[in-house]
Structure formats: structure tokens, C-alpha cells
Image 1 (cartoon, rainbow, N blue to C red):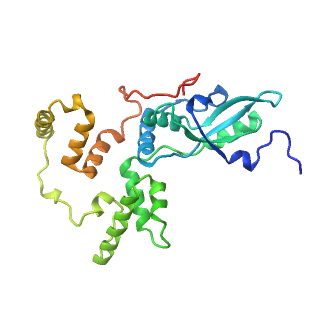
Image 2 (cartoon, rainbow, N blue to C red):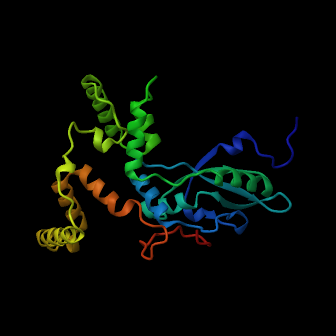
Image 3 (cartoon, rainbow, N blue to C red):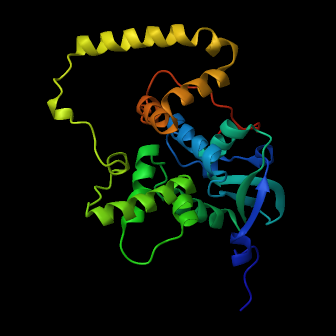
Length: 271
């Protein structure tokens, strides 16, 4: 059976290329969200880019005009947040993976609708880590360490440590709770015996510790933020430091007044 002109084919759908953001155009015909960009989601995805490398390819359409002739434009169908995340993590000149499809505008709109119907808000670091831990704990044939790491956006070394920890827990007859922060150690401090701290006492402790930390760090944060970051990592260790930064930044309200400046791709239209 002969396909009609410009019909989608499997080869068209699966054509993945690496594209520079400036090569990508936007069209109001394919912008379906009432709120175009959630900054907090871009930050989560940018963190995944830095940690894991590549995200799922964005979806582009090889645009055709009313007569079916290609215009030369690649129009964004799905992936605004991923596009901004790459720009935030790598700058606007870095190439990013994209699936490029061909077809009529209606076919392109259909693909865009299907892609945008998926729930794609990223999990925070703790949720991803617990997801990997629970996957490791599931019975049956084991998935490979790289597969689990890629699926949940955690380091392969972390998944390897989870497998070792599960073996130790099974030998001891312990049942995993599914919370990696609890299950990764044998004992947790007995919090029930500690008297509840008042808000006033808590704030006083925060101010006192903050002032001491500021004095200890001196002008490092102004001279070289990387040195300050490495000093904090040395003092607290990567696990505790990640936990603290997640507490402060991972679940910021999407309607907060203050947002970080995000670099956006250098295109004719803002994403």
C-alpha cells in the first residue's frame, strides 16, 4: 500500500539527531500549556543533565507549508522544560538530542498532543533515590545496575551500594522500609528521647551556627565559590550536603516571588 504524501513513517518518527538550540523554532500552533515554563522544574531537570548527561530527546517537526513543501524550520512540539534545562546546565551552544518527525501540520499536532499528555514533572533527589532503593528491593529477576541508575537518575555507585546494603539487611533478617536514608544505616538516633525544641530556640541555634560558619568561611564565597563549595563538601560529606540542599531548594513553590535567572536558547521566540 502506497503511503499518502508526507505521511509519517517509523523512520521519520525515530530519526534522532543532535541539534543546537538556535536551530529550533517555536510556533503558537504547538504551544499548549497555559503556563509555558515552570522554573522549579527547569532547575530539577538541569540538575539531572549535570548528573546523568542526557535527558529524553525533545520532539521537533520538520515544518511544511500549505503546499507540502519543507520550509527548513524545525518546530518544537514537546520539550520546553528540557530545552531550558540544557541551556541552564550547558549554555545555549551545546547540542541536545532531538527526535525529528515529518508529516502534515495535523499529524504534527497529533504527535504533540500525545507527547504533552504524559506526566513528566521530575522527582526530587530524595524521591529518585528512594525509587532506586525500592527497585533494588523488589523480588524477582534483577535489573542491571546501569539500568536502575539511568531509570531513576542516580549514580551507578549508589545503586551498587544499595545492593550491598540489601544483602546485609537480609542476612540480619531486617526488612527494608523503602526509605534509603533510614535503611542505609543500622541505627538511627533516638529522636523520641530528645525534648522538642521551641521555634525561638531553633532560630537562635540557626543564627549562632550561621554566624560561626560565615566567620569560618571568611571571604571564600566572594573570592571563589568553588572553594567554598568544596570546603562544605569536605566538612559535611556529599550525602549530608545533598540532603541539606534538597531541603532548602528541591521543593520550592512554583509561584515563589524570587526565581533564579535561567539562560534561554537564543531563538526568535522565547520558550
